[in-house]
Amino acid sequence: MSAAWGVTAIALVSVATLVLGIFGLRVSRTTSDFFVASRSVGPRLNASAIGGEYLSAASFLGVAGLVLAFGADMLWYPVGWTAGYLVLLVLVAAQLRRSGAYTLPDFAEARLGSRRVRTVSSLLVVAIGWLYLMPQFQGAGLSLGSITGARPWVGGLVVAVVVLVSVLSGGMRSITLVQAFQYWLKLTALLVPAFFVLLVWFGDGGVSPASEGVTAGGVPGDVWAAPLASTSAHPLYSTYSLIVATFLGTMGLPHVVVRFYTNPDGRAARRTTLAVLALLGAFYVLPPVFGALGRLYAPDLVASGSTDTVVLELPARMIGGLGGELLSSLTMAGAFAAFLSTSSGLTIAVAGVVSQDVVSRRLRPITAFRVSAVVAVVVPLGLALAAPDVSIARSVGLVFAVAASTFCPLLVLGIWWRRLTDAGALAGLAVGGTCSVAAVTDAFVGTHDPGWVADLLGQPAAWTVPLAFLTMIGVSLLTPHRVPGHVARFMVRLHTPEAVVLDRGRPARH
View 1 (cartoon, one colour):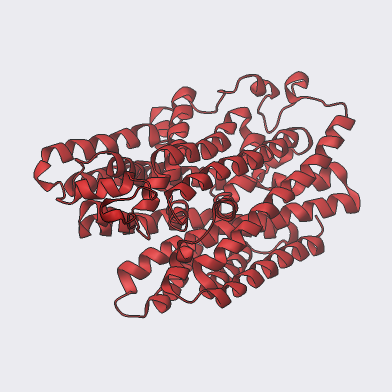
View 2 (cartoon, rainbow, N blue to C red):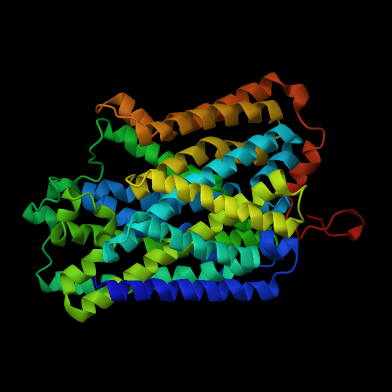
């Protein structure tokens, strides 16, 4: 790809993001504007914003890279990331909106009446947010370096600066507009090049890796005939563990959950989730196309360890000339939109928690939010520069495992089981968080021969999620005297539709 075209694409996306972000400054005046856009975002706009926020570097670059390297079994990633919203729709979305909370720690404290649960939840939100921000900065450095030869820190720094300007300008209200725009940009940035590369493939006779036995980096083409084929020593376990992490981890991601607080009511939250399912389904059809065709036209990327760049490089390789350069530049624009939109959402989520629980007593709320946003970005940027070689999709998959092992049990039991106690919640968060974070740490620094130990730590959700649920339930049953006195009233609030009129003819307050 021409460096000039790539840099131009990045510049245009960055300028558009900054313009929309600064526009938000004109309409963001209150604390509620900065945290939850005054709870006034309609389902269609919110669904586009969630799609823009959720489709991260792992979705835009990582899925195609995994399919290129390992074949069709990696399709569980996009399937799980989409299906996670179905679980969210059924179990959490409307009830969480009715809780009236701003953040996950707000919900935990309101449900259990415990400052200690709030503190632990706040620490987990920050940890998950930072772990998820790392691959965004890594992907930005990888993408910019692939076209300009710039050092990895340059791309990460560009994303960090643009995100901070947008977030500091208008908070959640401005970021909603930015992320909605970026979803449609990302979809276009994959859809248009995919159309042309498929035309080239059909023009070449539609050669299939399975039929021709083509290999990519030593992975045989017949892997496409076995969807559960895997490099794991225990592929069935790894597959089911990945499904658990992606299906249940979505509801535990702080930047996803905070979006539902911006809806006017629970019904709008459900409608938003349905729209998100459609938008994600449309998007996730596309990255596997690049990964599959990369096995034919760019197998050398596996040997060089650059599989995450296949989306960026494939159009120029297959089409060539000015047309290929322009299409690759379009994918570069989409990639940077992915980094910016997800980073913005994570920054909002982490900054909201830090500002409320750490610095709010010392500064005015909006000033505290802005200071916290700087902290939310600077720390993971430093971590990303310290660990530049971790696979983008793999690191995000491990973050899902942490979220599924902590906030998923807390939300499901907190919403649907009135006997949950603060002691049970603390024990479950400690067990699930410790085990899953230990597995993530081992994935970054540990080395194990193929076998059960490597698979259990590489895909921990299949055992950490049940362990966290069982711990919360067991300890809660042992401490029935700690069930909050307001639990019956709070459960009614969570499960009563806003349209229901309560006593004295007045609508429910939330």
